[in-house]
Image (spheres, rainbow, N blue to C red):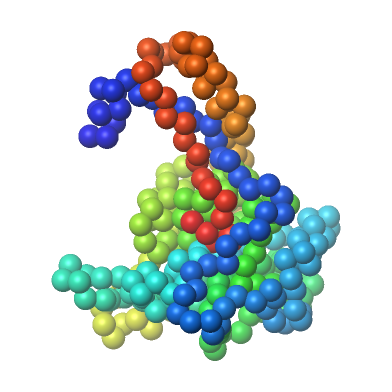
Length: 302
């Protein structure tokens, strides 16, 4: 229906590719509004001590320089935040409006645990460098113990990390993060929570750039078993995304197409052409809608 309206009005979409953050941009920390307790801190303790954002980027650069793999993990800002419906303690609702399934907390911890099962090591220098964006909660891990090769912060400079070079990106699949991953040519494992994340997870598989792990929807009393299976599925599919080269090939092809889309210079060209009374050659245009493919985000932002 929407497409028919645009056609009738003579409007077209001009794809420009992603409009990403500049290096070093400061980003929001997440959706923490249930009091100040547990608000994001500049650094989070892990097996290797405390690390801030700049130290994190230095370690990513070092990993790239030595050929060490880097895996970025982020479940977003909403599901790790305080939204009563979609946040840390929120659950999806059934047809009658009653909550069911896993909480955001249970989902995130199972996803993080799957990544740790797949690539965690007892030494900080062994295995891939795991970078985990935790969000603003006071006790994000609970009883889960991060491995020595994991760097875990409340907020990660996501675009900066992706630009430096990441071998895989476990993401919730929000439009911002999904586009950032595609633009960086990174194979994706999409673990959606709700909304557009589910559609983007399906797109990842259709496009061949990665795999998805659907959010479990267990009946009451079966949450623990569902979380355990989800954890195993995340570990198995993350290993596949990292080891099967077809995902990297498709991701690289997609990044190339986005880079050739024209970006801001193409937007300027289109607007100046229209201002001078011209039009793209395909059709007579009465209105042009220039799309920003994404807005800046924190690690796991939208």
